Amino acid sequence: MTGAVGIGSRTAGRLRELRLPLGLWALTRIILLVCVFRIVVVPGPDVTSDVEQIYQSWYEVLKTGTYPQDDVTWQYPPAAALAILSPALLPFLNYSAAFFVLAFLCDALVFALLVYTGGRPGRTMRGAWLWLAAVPLMGPTAYARYDIMVTAVAVAGLLAAIRSPRVLGALAGFGAVLKVWPALILAGTPKGRATWRSWPVAAGTALGVLALCMVWMPGGLAFLSFQSERGTEVESLGAMVFHVARHFGWDGEARMNYGSIEFLGPYVSWVSKGAMALTAAAFGWLLLWRFKARRFTSSTVADAAFVAVLLFTATSRVISPQYMIWLVGVAAVCLVYRSSRMGTPAYLILWATAVTQFEFPVWFSHVTQSDWLGIGVLFLRNGLLIAATLMACRILWKHTVTEAGSVTIPVPADQPEPEKVLTRSA
Image (tube, rainbow, N blue to C red; front, top):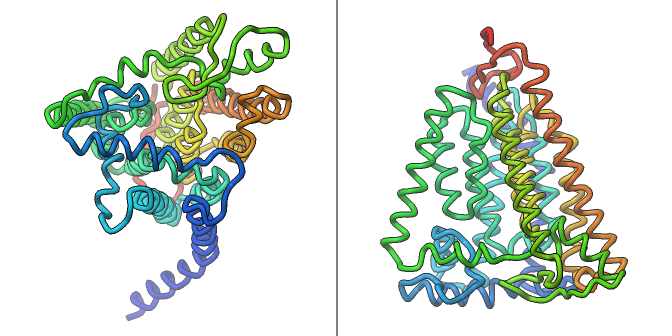
């Protein structure tokens, strides 16, 4: 009887602790829904138009049993069709409304996972608070792209990493066929058993889902040629060169190309190739880190995933606003663990997310015109992104390589103090 009373009192105490975050989450998400349903109009371009026009047009094609093979804006892996077709699960709503509701539910799932994990012994609620704040700071774009669905898959995989490497692998593999980047959540799996349990499962899942998609509908690999022809998008780091150069006589322009506003003109191909070279160098650094890393704590899988996604994003030819949702989701998982030292880079990403809403949609016309307001907000967002990337890389290297005198085996998820781990001589 005493035990039951104790459990009841702990449950009641936990519910009291959650009243504020749950209330704030509900309030901010109601505001987001009001915006995406255009009851309140956000300044700038209509961010919901992609759902109403592009996504819905893909939906109509996919329903016929084929991928959009003649549409250059279809630049996503085959399993993305599942996200585009998902509004069919809510047939009582029109396509756009159903999509927004599903995005809202994915947001709720991520928040619930972070709250549940954050309440366990040895964990913190910092990750849930970061997610709570960052999604509304992103604005209606968060619910008007399918990236929040992909992020939910990646977050679930990372949170399952310690207890079940196979679940991590399965979700990473599935996520990779949704939008490639979730494969990066495998970057920090501890050497040995955890890697051998997760990586083959990820590869098997990805190949299995890919095969099913190819059998299901023709044209599943059409996205590869469309994606390879992308140029330097106006929001990327490389584009900053041309934003400034336009004020000094550069003979180029910014216009719609392959589904986004890109720079076209002299030297753009050089910058695009430079970005790809930087991406290759970034992955080379990650490989070197995996080879040199000697210390793995309970947060290392999430920390390394955060660094990998930062590197992938910062060096991309395209840094669309919704990419910030990826970073916020993985950063939130890092902050769940007391052992993580990624607090400062995570908060820099939170600030970058807030600036991103001004970069797009609020002042996007200034960005495309390369006036000084547009250049200023873009330099601020990308500067925060670069700072977070460099700082996170330094922290990961220092924590797992420089300071490591032994190989650390992660403790179970319910261990009260994650840093008290079993070690053996390196």
